[in-house]
Every structure is written in structure tokens, then in C-alpha cells.
Image (tube, rainbow, N blue to C red; front, top):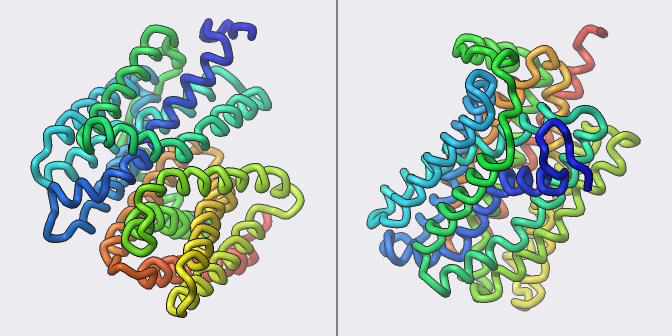
Length: 407
């Protein structure tokens, strides 16, 4: 494949590097899922369910970091921010590896999330620096396609690491992964933002962007709906391993079922891309939320009936797939809806949208996950409530947009 004069790397290598940066998030979350029982038994034996917090604490840190990494990379350069984030991530992973209390482990996971926000946000900025238009869209699509495979295989990789070195070994794997990414970037990718194109970091500008965005009804409602959609995804992620283990006694096969569901749900983005121009973003989001309301209500009802265990498990697999599928048909559309009126502050708006929705979603998912009581009731009721609220907000968005003056 030909080389790009902008960075001197073959496009295949560049795409692989960007995909690996994106994969930091999914690997850091999904590879932890098989470790939850062992972490609970080791660090919280009186309430093993608290082990779920290792997921939401990471997401919380990532959300906070998302506020700042984009503007910081505009001020100091892309590579410095990614390298700084990687150092934070590696140090926090080392602390997590040696943690002997759940509180220290959770604190280290928050810091890991802060560090992981660098590759997540700045990786997109690097692609923007080097490519534009359809070529940028093509490279992002290929990188995201590779990224979607990570959730399918991360739990299996995590299970393999646990079998070889125990749950602490996963944090060493995280550190090694980050070292590989930052060394690869450092050796092969030149800085993509020249000094003359950098903009000083100004906190008042960031706060002004937050105020402007929350004052616009479409943007505000879109962020609220995106928060609830992420909340449904994070709640399912925090509860899914205990559900397989406690309710269905399938802890050993969990990584394989999770991988199957992730691959099936990965087709949602392809479907959305195929129909969004014809159907429209708002309609797809609204329909998806209505479908999830029906699915969650049906699962909530059926889980209370005396169904055979195998049938109930099959229904749960279908429901889990629908929740992951929902992410593919809503999150990208909602982000685009929120960005539409914010073209004049697009980069800062992207950071603000991602940060607010991620932090609030983690704040919703953590307490709901802790309600797990050995039944599907907390999960079903939580997801049904979130889907219903998001559906109502989409209807309110349609009414609010009808009242806006025509541009």
C-alpha cells in the first residue's frame, strides 16, 4: 500500500495504530469482565457485587479526561498528550496490580480512565490533521471496523490471562498494551499538529462552550438522551457477567457468548450507515428506543414466569444483543444531532458532549449495577426506565425543534 507524504507510514500501518489507540478503551473494560468474581472474592468478600465498580470507575475517569484531552492536544501537540496519558495509564495499572484494597483499586481505575481518554479523543484529531473528506471517512470506518472486533475477543483474552496469572495479571497486560502503543507512535508517527497551528488552552472558552451547548434545546436534549443510551450500555456491561454466573451458571462460557453477542451487535453501525440518509437520524433513534422499551418490558415480564432455563437464557442473549445493537443505532446519530448547531466550536463541542454524557452515564450505571440481587429485575427495570425516559426526551426534542426559528 502506498505511503502518505503527511506521515511517512503505509496507510495499513497508520490505520492499525489508530485502531489500537481506539481499542484501549474497549480492552480496558471488556477484558476485566471475567475477573469480576475473583476481584470480588479477594477485595470485597462481604459484598462481591461491588467488584462491578472497577468498570464504572474507569468510565468515570475516561469521561472526566475527555473534557480536557482535546483542548490540551490543540495547545501542546497530539503526541505529548497521548504520551502523558499513557504514562498516567501505565502507572495506575501498576498500582492496580499491587492493590490490596478495593478502594485503592477503584482509585487507580479512575486514573487509568483519565489516561485512556488521550488515545480515544486525540486519535480522532490525528486522523483529522492528516486526512479530509471521503478519505478521512474511509480511514475512520476501517479503523472503527477493527475496533468493533475488540469487545468480541477481549473477554476471552482476559479469561486466558486470568487462567495463566490470576486477575492481577490483567493489569500488567494493560500496561504492556499501552507501552506498545506509545512506543509505536513515538517511533513511527511524527507530530501531526505544527506549532503554528496550536491554540492556547483557555478554561473560560471550555466553560463558555458548555454554557452555550446546554442553552440550546436540541443539543441539551441530545446530550440527555445520549447519557441514557450510554447508561443502558454501561448498566448491561456491569451486570452481564454476574447474570451469566449467578442466574444462568455459565461463567465459564461467558467470554464466548459475549464475543458472539458483540459480533452480532456490531452490524448495527452498518445498518445505520445504510439507512440513515433515507430514514433520518432522529427517527432511527426514536424507533430504536421504542424497540428497546418493548424488549426490556418483555424481558422483565418473562423473567418472572416459570420458563425453562435454556429458553430464558436464549431470550436474555437476544435482549443483550438488542442493548448493544441500540448503541450502534443511537450514539453516532445523537452525537451528530448535537454537533449540528455547534459547527463553530466543533472540536470543543465534541469533547464536551463526550465528557458530560460519559460521566453522567457512569453515575447512573454504578448504583443500578449495585442493585443486582440474583435476578433480572434490577437490570430489566433499570433499562426499561432509561429507555422510556430517553424516548420521551426524543419526542420533546421534536416539539422543541418545531418551535425553533427557521435558519
